[in-house]
Image (cartoon, rainbow, N blue to C red; front, side):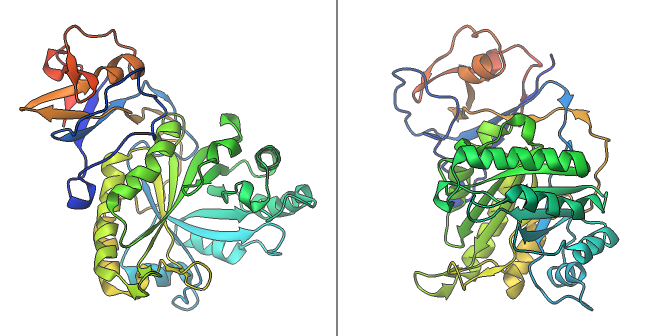
Length: 394
C-alpha cells in the first residue's frame, strides 16, 4: 500500500489560528492522557485511502460550487441566469426546496432551466412537520415527477430531529422507505441524508450506510462569527463520515445581526473568504458547497443574501474560483481514492515536525515506530525518523 501523508498548515488568518479538537473526535483520547499544552504551530494531517469505489457523482478532486435558487427575479424570468449574472460567478449546482405534502407541483420549469444551463439540480425535500399521516402516499406522489426527468440530480432530505415531532426510529423508517421508492422509480437520483450542525443528536437519525449516497450538513453562521467556529461545529460530523461518504455542505452566512440590528458587511466578507479557503484546505471530502443566498429576516432574524451588497459579491466571487463551477456528472471517477483527514494534529517544535503516533497506529495500521516522546500531552514521533518515501509533507 502506497500511502501519502500530507501535512498542511491550518488557515493562518487571525480568526483561524487556533483549533480546539477536544470533544469533537470520533477517536477518543487514550486513558489518562495529559492535558495538551498549547502547541507551537498546528498542522492538519492527511493521508490517501486505499483505492475504492467512489459514491454516485463523487468527484475525485475538488468540490462542486452550488447555490440556493431562492426567488430572485431573473433575466426574463430565468432565475439561474439572473443570479449568476449579478454575482459574476458560474455554479455547478443549483438548489430548490419543496415541501412534501404541501407543494402540489414538481419544480419542472426550474429543472428544465437547470438542464438548459448545464447545472446539477439539487432538490431539498422538507418532510411533513409531523410524522402523523400517510407520508407513504406523499412519497409515491412526489417521486413521479423525478421519474419523468431521468437526468442526474441530488435529492436531500431536510434535517429533522426530535424537537420537530419526529422520533428517530420513525424518521429512519421514513427515510429508508423513501430511498427504496426512489431507487425503484428514479435510480438516477443520488440520495443525501442531512444533519443540522446545531443539533447534537444527529447520529440518532442516521438511517445507515446502505440508505445513503452522500451525507449533508447544514451550517448557519453570522458575519461576526470567527472562522474557527466552522471548524468547531463541522469537525465532529466530518470525522464521523468523511471516510465513507462525500459530504455536501449547505452554508448560510448572515450579515445582519439581531443583537445590534446592523449589517456587518466587512466582517462577513472576511468570513466568506476564510471559510471557502478553509473548506478546500482542511475538508477535502466536502464535495459540494451550496450557499444559501436567501433572506430569513422574517422568521429567524438573519439575512444570507450576498447579492445585496457589492463587497459581499466580490468576496464570494474571488473566494470560489477554485471550486468546480461546471457540471460534470459521469462515471469517470467511479474508482479512486479519498483524502482522509487524521483526527490527530501534528505540529512543529524547534523546527522539527512531530506526528501523533495514533495517526500511524490507529488510522494507518502501521506498527508503533521506535523512539518518540510525549509532547503536548500526546505521544509523538519525529517525522524524519519514519521510512523515507512514505510521507509527503506540505
